[in-house]
Image (cartoon, rainbow, N blue to C red; front, side, top):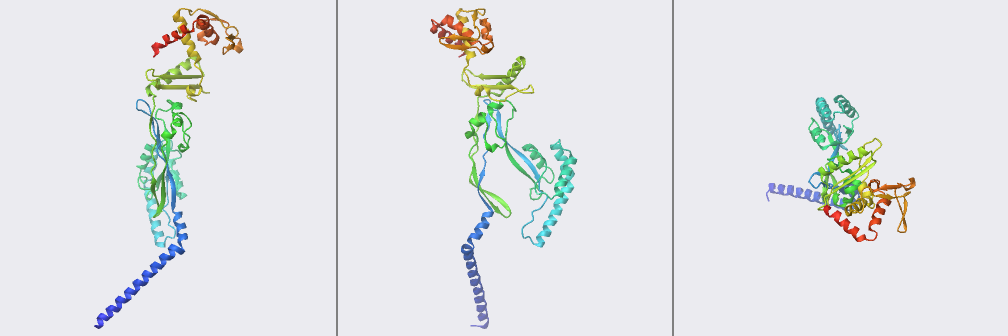
Amino acid sequence: MMPNQKNIMIRFSFIILIMVLVGIAIICKAGVIMFAERQYWKDVADRFVKENVTVRPTRGNIISSDGQLMASSLPEYKIYMDFMINKRKGETEEEEKTRLKLQHIKDSVLNANLDSICKGLHEIFPDKSAASFKQHIKNGRKKESRSWLLYPKRISYIQYKEAKRLPVFNLNKYKGGFHEQAFNQRKKPFGSLAMRTLGDMFPDIEQGAKNGLELSYDSILKGRDGITHRQKVMNKYLNIVDIPPVDGCDIITTIDVGMQDIAEKALVDELKEINATVGVAILMEVKTGDIKAIVNMTKCNDGIYREIRNNAISDMMEPGSTFKTASILVALDDGVITPETVVETGNGVYMMHGRYMKDHNWHRGGYGTINTTKSLMVSSNIGVSRLIDDHYHDNPAKFVRGLHRVASPLR
């Protein structure tokens, strides 16, 4: 073997020995991590992982019979500014210099565009002047805030997109610092129209519905939650979907927006005319039985009529006054009474077939002697009952046939 070859073999042997030793060291270190330090590294990993994070689905819409949106889930936002660049734990002196240099650049860009930003914010939110926005932003920078609230109220999606187009704000949040917090809010495009029929949600929409269609069909509208787990990678959280959320279904009601609007205006006009406290109107399509409008109006302390509660649904009682009208129609149609036929109601209490019947004003002495017209006008139980009993007591079948007769045009 030549001397050069011998030297080469020694070098190769040395290199192989070094690689074997490095390999053994790696295997030993891996063994230590897997067994001796296993729990420690597992605890470290758990600090950067969030399991079973709930993902909320989008709530379904409520749609009118004519296809118009009556209730929908729309996002609202709060907007913030982060004035500082992240300081990394254990950063070197060189990394700190780089971070401070970037911070200086970030501050310079913000200061150069501050007037444009504040002018744009004033145009989007006219209730605050550009000068007040400017002072507010300067205060946040002075305090080195990481989440400085730029505007105190929640804003709409359109306002958020307009703000996002402003200088600096249009950069990603790690460069510009502009970021947002989203809220899922229930909105009614037609305002108070059919408000109690549609129903209300709690301020936090995740708590569910209070009443109305929102509550009755909550299981259909709310959908099903999804699940993700969040893992921190390179100083950022990544959402990994385990079970995707299922958005809620839309429901189509029988309510017609146009008819509902007309019914509300007509009822309020009538209530104002007679200075009534409460009024209810229900509009039904006779052919199908579909309810096209439900209106419930209550006079508030300020004299304005509003939908406070759904009296049409909550105040369940026998429709006695409706039957009184039908009964009088039968008797008039048969010619057994006239509008001027006199009936005695006494002091508001009358014994009718073994039971006492009362008018609503019996405690004030009743209506005394009144005619057919007055009986219907004041909805006297005694007056209408005596008129029908006097003429149909011996022939109730005739009265039933009369009811079918007067009701047939309504079918």
